Image 1 (tube, helix red, strand yellow):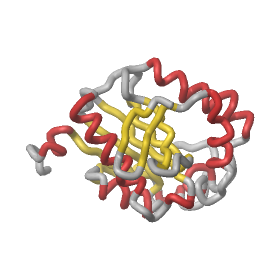
Image 2 (cartoon, rainbow, N blue to C red):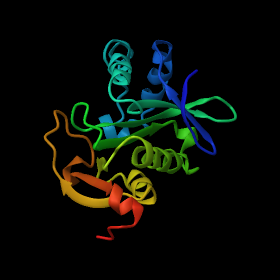
Image 3 (cartoon, rainbow, N blue to C red):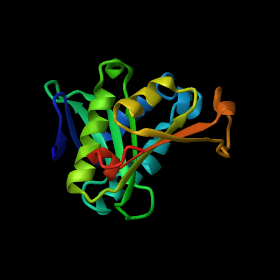
Image 4 (tube, rainbow, N blue to C red):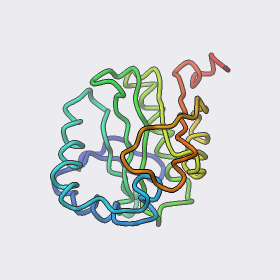
Length: 188
């Protein structure tokens, strides 16, 4: 197992082709998928044929960017994943931060811990200049994680989604943090 990043309670590692079932189980929980698909699971064949191959292909992109399987550092249990990948193909200056954790990992500060560690790694070692994250306006828990991770509210917008889910009428929110802000040189 190649660990990319350790935090106090998490080990973030690359996904492998053998991880499909972990992703199936994660996306099978209606509460985990509530703000993504309205609670509908991702079909297992979609994970095996599209989702996991896309994740694995990103490791060929600039080093340190992609999706990372999150494991309990002591237990080794799969807790979910973190995303830290370029918003523009291969350009490390701006990355998107995301996460999806099993319900058993909710409320313990693990999402914030993983986000903060990736932000620090990005700004200190990977050449990242701006981190951005998005969620549904009504997803208060994710918004709190973004704020506790240091990201700042940028805007509310309405996306053009193929299927509307409950709460989508309130739009999406974007949060962001620049390296200058993170360093404390820009307080705006």
